Length: 317
Image (cartoon, rainbow, N blue to C red):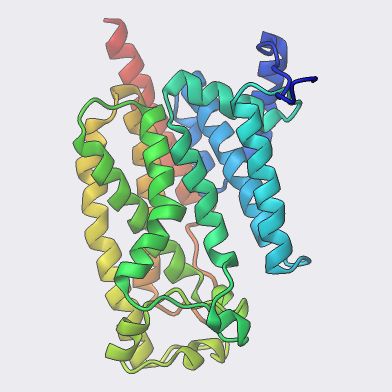
């Protein structure tokens, strides 16, 4: 345009918006795994919004995780993509289905743009050039304070977005959602210790490792087999911290809108089941990847759907 301002786009038609949400649902079905089971237990509009947010997160993660590019190239790609999103959320013309759906979801559920920016900031944390990464050493966190900041950006922010879609009126929900996100991320960290080490990353705090007499190199060079007793004690300490954090999820549940509680329960139940399976396996996470069997996830989902049906019936009375 002559004055240099971005071209504004008329609101997308209902048909175009439906197609955008359908594309996001497809992404969530293919990629979301544990998350998608909880989406199914939501009413339609909220389910679509969750799928849109997931597709947005997935796009950012894919750009961040593209190991065919250098860290610098990935940071540049993410910055360009974020700039495109900022233009789209401001009303600039876009044909990007994910941007269209997320923009609509953010408006419907009053999701602050700052939270969406923090979602992307979380994906870039692993791309920062540090003295360790430049020297070819593993990416690590000094202590739980540093790890909690990472968990906040990659998981707690997701929780803060989700509760806006789920609906709440009690301000206590926000702190509880942050803690629930940390519980989820600590569970992921325990499950992925071996995979992360293969990517030259150790997310267990160095201070906690030192307390248990475990060196970073012990995990980086660990064979695909049993953990040592020192390593088991280290992993157990992280698992116990995660278990305490799941207490926040129990407090959060009754603060959500009644129609959304089944979905949150499904998500928490699946992640908590994963932590318990890791514990039951005595933290043998280096020999194999521990997961929740599909039949167990489906059983949890069925219970959530029955709860959702009961909520809908009682609301009509």
